[in-house]
Length: 113
Length: 114
Image (tube, rainbow over all chains, first blue to last red; front, side):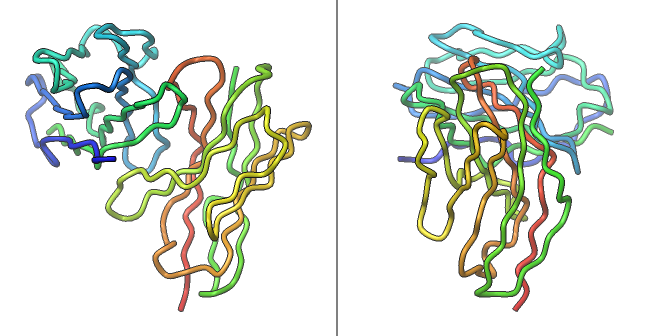
């Protein structure tokens, strides 16, 4: 199956700025996810999105984060006011079958200065 | 709480040799899935192998196989005939009950030496 495409591959931003990370899965997939990996640490679940709604979110996913699928294709993660500790690799993933077989994108590296 | 533990931060193996990476987990779920993901220097997460807890037979994918011991809550990965391209971080992961909410271990950095 085609891979999940994430943009940008790397973004540098100033603390307090808004950032939008984009993911382009295949349009007929139902399950989408965002994960985060701080450098040198393990991968952490942020949020799952099913049938155009958030189905589950972790305690990391606080009010500064939001997800949406505005045009039925792109799946975005917005960070409203970035903090230094938001610097990480952000991975989008999809599950086309609902059988918990996740395919990850190549990741978007976010650097907050 | 559900946890995944990888007790080997780093390992190395000679090319063509066999290596086993350890993983233990803790859960009260009876129905769950276990995974091994590979993360090469490019940092992409690549699924290596998947095991369903209700299946007693150990999963195998070419040179990769697992030893799933449900009672011991152990899920080790064996890589046979190691290749230089196997050099990567390997993450053990678990899903139980929640759709797509993977819980990852801290990873094992594997170096394959020529």
